[in-house]
Amino acid sequence: MLQPRATGRSASARKYDLLTAMGSYALAQAKGPQRLVLRLMTLITARYNWGRDELCVGQREIAQLWSVDERTVKREMAKLRAMGWLVVRRQGARGRVTQYSIDIEAILKTTQPQWAAVGPDFVLRMEQGDAPDPKVVPLPMSGSVAPPDLSDGSEWALAQAVLHQEDPALFGAWARSLVRQDRAGGRLTLCAPSRFHAAYVETHLKDRILALCHSVDSEVSEIRITHA
Image (cartoon, rainbow, N blue to C red; front, side, top):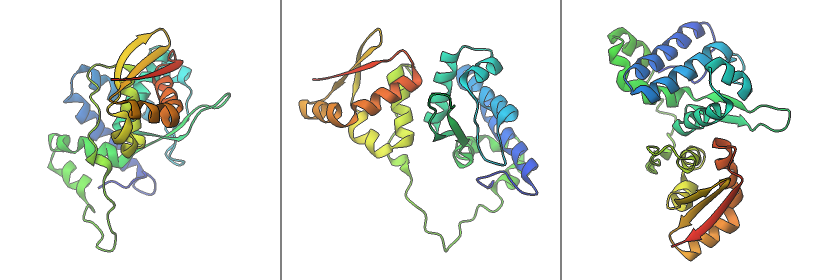
């Protein structure tokens, strides 16, 4: 399979193969996911620094490239993080944009079912060297925790999906069972299944949940935790 970083003598061919896999996958999807992948492909082609393995572009510049507003950029980037295709390497701060990298292994894993549509030569090329090294002990995958349902497109669903990618154990233990109860202006109310659960989230996780929600919807400024 492709190397985790597209560098070296055959780097150009590997980049084209990666973009081909993404494009073929996108064309087999519905309109929403198709547009999301196309936006990422355009961003990668225009702005990705392959030598440093980083994407360091401001939301305003991305919005101009995609012909959308900055709020749409924030939501789309959150979706890509939730898919595992984009990884935050350094969080943005005042005067500094967020630095991302693409997770090639995650992209290949998602797009693999569509490789055959490109052709058998493409499948063979993508799978070359895929045999595992017997001296390497594989680590357990985080996929044992099922991802959240993104069908409603709410800020909480997106925030849960991002947390699932960043910390699946934490998501499975505490965030998955929090239910979006209400949204009033900038205040988002989440309902926990028990008093103890609500107290733990209030004490240990509320700030992180607020930061996640704010990262996908900048109008979220307060989190309120209730219980059943």
